[in-house]
Length: 382
Image 1 (cartoon, rainbow, N blue to C red):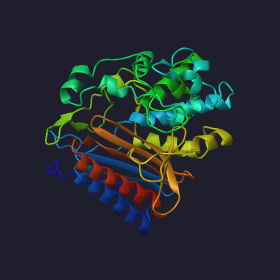
Image 2: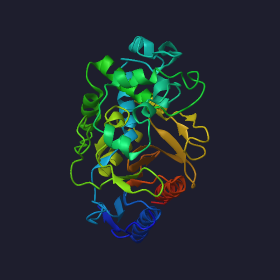
Image 3: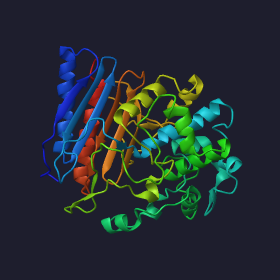
């Protein structure tokens, strides 16, 4: 991937009177976006919103065939950032006293979590939202072979949430509930099922009526079985084997891109607005927001920076300048997303990388470049 096009760098400042320090921040953001491109990403888009206005940076290309630039405010696959929206709806139901974080899965969804040593009586709603349930991640069952052939053969196949959970129930728990931490998409498939059981409406409808409509997030949606992104968008590319070709994977892999664990799409402007509203307490009561921010340590070896904690649909990550930021990542075939917000909600950032390499060293370099970009953008003074 070292020979990818280096064209397409473009930065802009939107709204708010630009000052000399702000111009410097503009250049720094573009520099960091270019560094991510230089690490091998086909296309990069960044949006930073602060009290002074907004900065955007783009680098690389939005399509390898045409060489067109990455679009400004293009539509993005949010991937697992969907989980933050879903967790927010669950916590709103807690605010409304329609469920509690200490209720067990068995109480809400009787008989769904059972078999192979799994016991819904021992797993709480809180365990689901912070990945301390011990439930096996179903994704390995729907993508058993890590190759392009499997992607093309199965990308249109859909599963109902109960089917995905049933797959996970064929596996023994990864650990006793509440005793450890491991990221599992199964947790949020169940969270979506809980929303529907409690409200009588699908989780997508609840996200729309409770979050998207009130915040006027008109470019964010849960598309369900629709595989297409609205225009404009940058194409996503996955390398399935080291040294292999980049495969256009802009069409998602439906077996794990359909549900409450990762199906939403949106724009950086919308995502930043959502994260800012959430952190400023506009969506949850203070006690519930505090519970969302209360974290358990993420153990080493799980791909997160040292000191990262997991709350209820939000991760807390340290910053080099002190303190930390809240947010979530999202990834799928051909893309990596990060949404981040300072604890006070004053600085929000969305970063999208539109390709993924198969080589672990290349992936590590790209991850380091993305972390540097986030840290620099959120630590930079107003």
